[in-house]
Amino acid sequence: MEKITEKEELEASAPDSITFNGELPSIEQLVHLLAAEAMKRAVGNTLTVAKMLGISQHGREQVS
Image 1 (cartoon, rainbow, N blue to C red):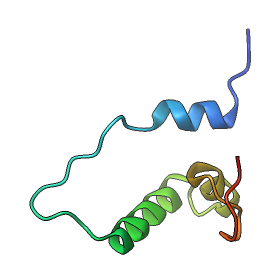
Image 2 (cartoon, helix red, strand yellow):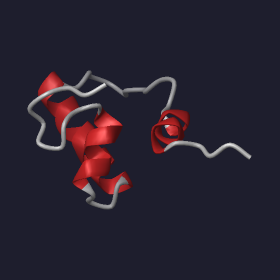
Image 3 (cartoon, rainbow, N blue to C red):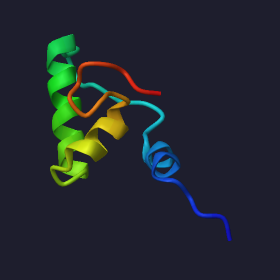
């Protein structure tokens, strides 16, 4: 049996769309919400958060 990578597992759990009620949030609000959700899902593990968001662990550069 083939092992599923952490990246594949994260991609499989990502939603296809997000629904907003009422007024759309600002980009700044979205970034905050996204980071908070990632921290919640990763139970505070910043390396996992960085992988989820496709950024370096310190947020300075995008990783592929």
